[in-house]
Every structure is written in C-alpha cells, then in structure tokens.
Image (cartoon, rainbow, N blue to C red):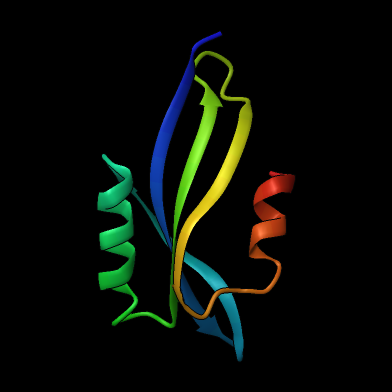
Length: 84
C-alpha cells in the first residue's frame, strides 16, 4: 500500500448568494499551494490550500487537511473533507 501526498488549491465562488466550490488545481509543493491559494484569493471570494493523502493503488482517501484558507470558505468545508 503506497501512500501518495497531493497538494491542491480549491477555489470558491458565489452562486445564488451561496459559497460553492469552484475550480480545483494541483500544486507540486505545500508552499506552492499556500502561495497560489493566497494569490488567487485576490480574485475569488475564497480559496483553500489542501493536503490530500491517498492510497496510490486504490485511490482510497487516508487524510485531507486544510493547510490554509483565504477569504470566505463554507462553514462546513472542513467537515466535508473528512467525509470524503
């Protein structure tokens, strides 16, 4: 069982007066994800840098952690990561 760590930036947009997930982009490093999320927050209502650890063979999620959040993100976003 080989675990793989991926760093991602999740954006959030406002649709019908609600924050909803927008685009999700990969980043090669943790610091890169944080910098990208912070920069993108200037153009978006909110962004989050996320670290995802999953089994490389099965794709089974081991853990998802918010490294940083900028601007507005939904209140239940952290909970939804744990449920995924």
